[in-house]
Length: 163
Image 1: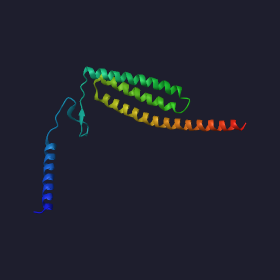
Image 2: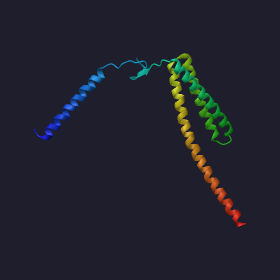
Image 3: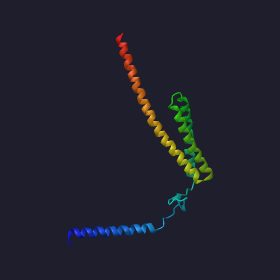
Image 4: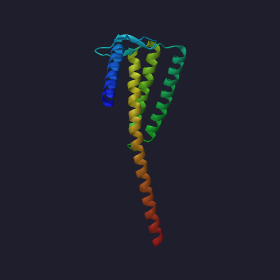
């Protein structure tokens, strides 16, 4: 046997072993722990998460809900104060998404309903996405304002020097 034949044989043996391990892995049932259930969602092949709310998690969720409400109120106040410009109106919309996530957490605490957990993640995800877009637009807007301020100061200084 040549060196090439040895390499081919080794590669074929490795592939057979990997296929065997993969088949064994696919045929073993997944272990259920405190966060998993064997229930399959509507047409879904992914197991859904079963959540057990202990006292520490309830306390943390209450804190998250309170934090979201406080930040939401402050964002609404800032949005109202800056609503003179168009940049303040989206901030109110973003604050409402944060309030929606807070309401979903409270429903989760009182009903232990998985739909409330999904609503929380959905609302929090939208809040995060809209906040990132708002931040990008705000930074661009601020850079433009700084640029125009520098231009105006430069023009004013130039016209002042002419007199």
